[in-house]
Length: 79
Image 1: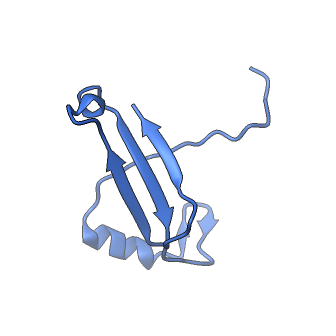
Image 2: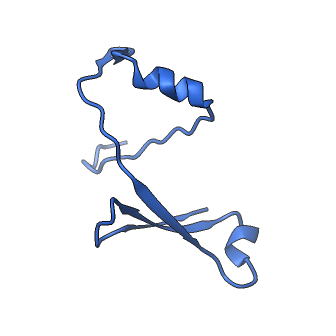
């Protein structure tokens, strides 16, 4: 398949304990990648559905995410 130059998002979600997150925060590297900076970002997620929960029944979510109170957010529909 030819390359289009359009980035592809790859996401992996894992469940982990608070201790695992604390251990990750102390890491100097992840495989071949060296940690040079850590930042903390506060997100606010607001989820929407219809009164009869039609999105939820179809295993969909509609979310607005804002970062640190910025005026512009990100709208995501997953399903």
